[in-house]
Amino acid sequence: MADYKYPQGLAAMSQQDVNNLITSAGDQYKFLKNNDFAATYTGPKGRDGDYLEAWQKGDRGDRSWPRDPKLPVSRAGLEIFRPDTSATDIAADVFSHTDKNGKNYGSQLLNSLSPHQIAQMKKESGDYYQTLRMGLGDKAATQNASSSLNRAAVFNQWGYNGLGNMGINVGQQNIINQAKGYANSGVVPDKGLYDIRAALGIDSHGK
Image 1 (tube, rainbow, N blue to C red):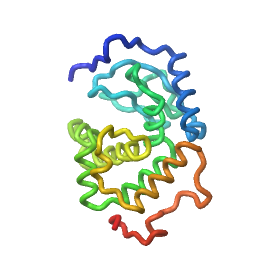
Image 2 (image 1 turned 135 degrees about the horizontal axis):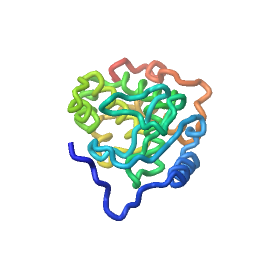
Image 3 (image 1 turned 60 degrees about the vertical axis):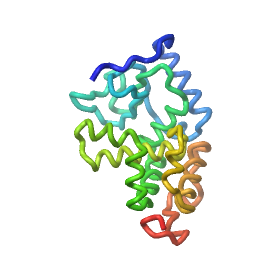
Image 4 (image 1 turned 180 degrees about the vertical axis):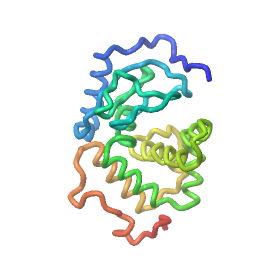
């Protein structure tokens, strides 16, 4: 696969640029204050023009996709590939990959999907097909598609009507609204992370 080349006219990011971007993201999305992570700019890494990679604490990657050595494995990490990465991109990746509460909201949303919605999620998410091309199988591809859906629902990352095509129901919209509230405020509702489907009498298939 040929290395992705970012648009002409965009300079590589200094560490100060990275730090300023992280600060800006934290000012916009208060949940980031709950997270300890290191971040570095490495430049294009040759995978379909990805903007960044979020690394779990302790995750070293593998030979084909290693964690950058500038990111200590004792902390979560963000590896930024493109200088046009935005504060929202930063927040979305942390929320869906390394923030405990963000991941829990994503799991709630995935568990509420009907078979038809899961099929639609796979269709709408480029991450699903990218993961399959990497040879990681349907289970991993579905999980990555779920993370993509989480980012789309909370941070509007599917820049078209993909989320509208999902047929989101009332219970699922409540999960999304809670997730958005947490992302913006950094505060989990008093009742904590609970399965809102049960509170609304919605079954496990989102009906």
